[in-house]
Length: 124
Image (tube, rainbow, N blue to C red; front, side, top):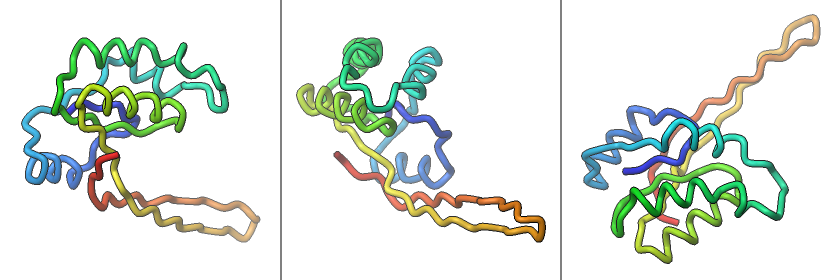
């Protein structure tokens, strides 16, 4: 399974990938592409120029029927998923439940904690 994903996979995600999807190897994008993917400009209509190195990496490394876990900026994800679908690559995302807990202090400060719980992988 290839990763175009900004977080570290959780134990539950690794277990599901292996047990339910037959994954034997997890291959993250090269660090330069991970940085690029994490800093895609939000709201630009010219996303193709920013993600061309990502698409070039996918074209070189990934094969039909491979899995790609992809999440991130909406326009970039759309372009990558479109590329995957046209090349027989199974693009997937992690469906998750997010729970937010707020701790309020007498001085007015607030600490917000988000608890992320992986539910399952789904194909786009």
